Image (cartoon, rainbow, N blue to C red; front, side):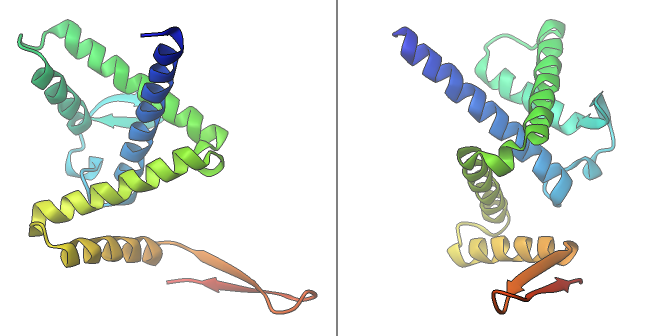
Length: 167
């Protein structure tokens, strides 16, 4: 492997890590899918943001699937430190506006969110394309219901019209 391909692989891994962490936070904050509301146990706080026990256990399970030997205390510590590092990176990305300003990060995050909603739908209703589409539409409608949306429509070049939609 050349130096260039190693660097590209590291950059891709970092981007995927960042996107995955961002998606996790978005899911925890925005919807009924595996959030801290199901388990109030927190394993760490990072600048006021909780890392939940569910997230920690899922990471441990993923590691255990990749290994042939049992998970030990050093592995547990490593996983928790990685989750903390992910959260720090996500917070930095949010602070820097990466989800808004980096089109690639935004598109990957949106696609990951849609994939997650569709996976949840498949788990609930089977491989039904209509049910999957309906689940995405219902989820987006729920987000819209909880949002305050302000439309700014220009009726002429002189007079902008502001319309605030409140649910």
